[in-house]
Length: 103
Length: 226
Image 1 (tube, rainbow over the protein chains, first blue to last red):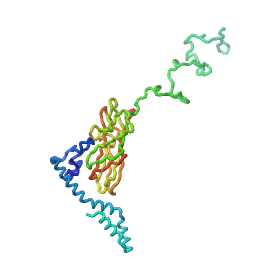
Image 2: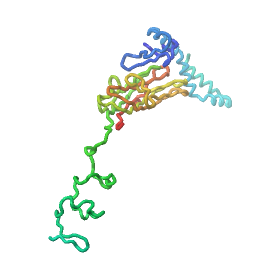
Image 3: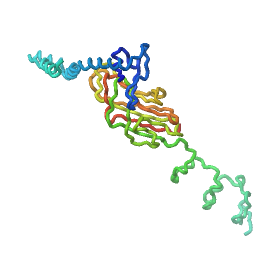
Image 4: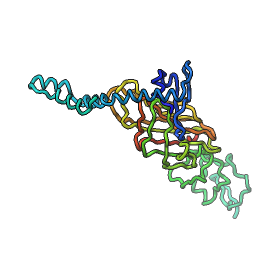
C-alpha cells in the first residue's frame, strides 16, 4: 500500500516531491502528483520503507508514553520542594513513570 | 331648472350630466377647487388613476401575497442542502482524503450524494453563485512538534479550488501534546450545472488521525439576486 511514511522514509517530502490522495471510494491511497526529479519508486519499495519506518516508530512508543507523563509533572517545583524538605518526590515520580513504560 | 348666472359670478341650475364630456378641464377649475367633498363614492375608479406616487403608499396597506408582487428577481436560495457525519473517519497522514459526509439534514433538489461520492452536484438549470460552508474536527491530534498542519479545502470537479475567498483552514499546532481541534471554512463560488464540490482534508501528524464525531458538516445554498 502506498503511504506517506514510506515515501518519507525513502527521503521524499510530502506536498513537495509527491501528493497523495484518497477519494474515499474504497480504492485506497494513490499518488496524485509525483514532482520529484527522481523516478517514482515502486509500490513494493514504498511498502518496504513503510515497514522500516513503522518498526522505528513502534520502538519509540515507551519514550512517547513517558514524555506524556513527564509533561504532567511540575518538575522544577518538585525538585525545589525536595531540596527544601529533604524529600525524593521528583525522583520517585520519574522512577515510577520509567517503570510503568520500560524500554 | 333654468341655468342662472348669479351676480356673485357663480352658476346654479346645472344638473348631473348637464355638461358635455370635456367641457370642464384643468384649465377651467381653480387650484384645489375639487376636494373630497365634491367626489362621491366610486367617482374615481382604476381607469382614472394614471400613477400613484410612492409617497401616497402610507398608513395601513392591504395585505399582499406573492402573486401580487411582480418585477422581483432573484429566486429562493435553492438548491440548498445541509449534511453531516456523526462518526469518526480515519485520515491517513500527508494524504488528501475526501470527507465522507453521510447524513442529510435537508437536500431541496436531491443534489447532495451522501452515500457514494459525498458531493454536491449542481442540478440542470441551477448554475449560479453558491455560498458553501464546511467544518470538521480532529480528535487527539498530536501537536508535540512544530510544523504540523491541518487543512480543510473545497474541491471543485476533483481539483483543489483556490479562487474566491479563503478556501481552507490551517493551524500550526506547535506546543502542547494531544489536542482536539475544530474549525470551519466558507466560500462563495461560481458553479455551472453538473459541477460538483467535495471536501478534502490533510494533516501531517505522522499517523492516522480520526476526525471528531459529529464535527464534520457540509452545507450550502444558491445565492439569490446575483
